[in-house]
Each structure stands twice: as structure tokens, then as C-alpha cells.
Length: 268
Image 1 (spheres, rainbow, N blue to C red):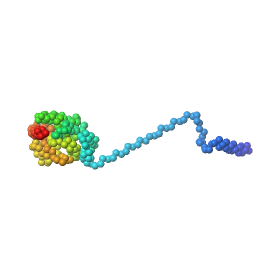
Image 2 (spheres, rainbow, N blue to C red):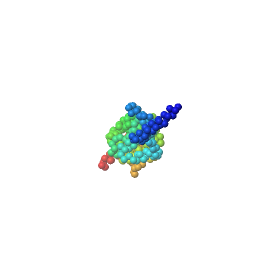
Image 3 (cartoon, rainbow, N blue to C red):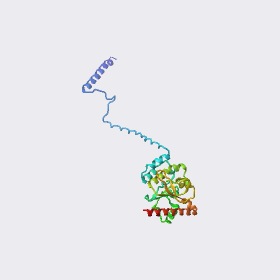
Image 4 (cartoon, rainbow, N blue to C red):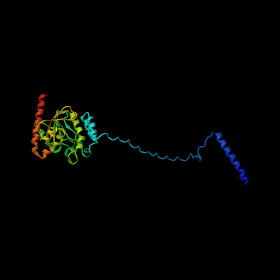
């Protein structure tokens, strides 16, 4: 017992002496509770956990689809701009079900713009207006008056085929028409040739659209143009394939077109 109590103070004295010696050697802080084995290989650090940064929210489109179409079409300064705007436009459900965009083709310098019905199956597959049997019929009709499609500008009423070839709804027409109006504004044709009742009802005056086609030139008022355009309303290509007698009306209208083109040539 006495030896234990005698050794206690001596141990404290020794520890105090060691601590003083460390201070004298320059130690001024305690680094760790346990000694560090500097010869032991370092343990690998765990890889930092990278958290995915959520993408910035995409702002919702402003305005109704028809309002957006009107603004987008109005901003197109060229035909290429208009085609790009149509390709990027997501406000019409027809685009989601169609195979291809059917845009205007032909001679952009032509003074005659031919407007057809909404694209059918062949137009949808090929991406070209007036394709398939309807296009072949148009080619024969144009050849009968000494023309071919390369000398004109051709476009469908709307740029996408409705599913199953159903009629275009009024809402879809309201969305697509600004692009057609802008196309006419960019091309600045001297006349329109309109095939089909749907296109005629939308582009011609009510009294002209209701009467039988091929009764002569009438005036079409296109939004964005300061003046009206002479227009011919002819039967639709699909109608003429099903009902050949309608081709007589189309022939009468094409003769009027040929006469107008000839008069145009004599004035130049």
C-alpha cells in the first residue's frame, strides 16, 4: 500500500517532466488522441456522391395554339423560315399522327399558287403535295393546257394528314390556316387555283364557295394581303377520281387559267 502511494507522485512528476520537455521542443498543441502510424498504407477515400441537378423547368407556351400559330407564322421572313416553323410547331395534334410534313413545292417565282385538299395517304407517305393517283390526274390535267407542276407552286390546305383521312376539325383549321395565309403572303402570287370544297369554303367568299365550281374567277381575300386575289374554285382531285364527270368542270376552269397565263405573257 505504501509503495503504491509512493509511486503515484513520482509518475505524475515524470509525466509533467515529459510534457515540459515537449513544450521545450516546440510542441504547442495536441494532434490526436492516438499515435499516427505513418508507415501504414493510406485508406482510399470514398468517391463523392454526385447528385443530379434537375433541369430548369421549360416555360409553358403562352397563348392558345391558334394564337401561337399566328405569331409563329407572322415571324417567318422566308419560305425556309416558314417550313422550319411548321416543323417545330407542337400546337397541332395532326403533327403527332402524320408521317411527314407536306410543305409547298414548285417554282416559288410562279404567279400561280395551286391549293389542294388536306394531304391524303400518298402525300403523307412521300411528304410531297399532290402525290399518288391524285397527283397523276393533276399532271394529266395540267399537260392538257401545256403546263406542268414545275412551273407552278403547289401546296395542301393543311400541312399534315388527318388520321385515317378524316375531315379536318374547325379547331385544326384555325391552327393551320395562319401558316397557309403566310405562305400566300411570302409568295405574292397573282392568282389562286383552289381544288376541293373545304379549301374553297375557307378561302373564297361564301356565295362563291356555295355555288358549283368552275363558274369563273372570283376574288379571294387572304389575311395579311392588302388586295384580293383572283381565284378559281375547282372540284377536288379525290372527287374527280370517284366521279369522272366532274372533270368537265375542272377542264373549264383550267381553260380560264390558260387564258389568264397567255394574257400575262402578252403583257410582259
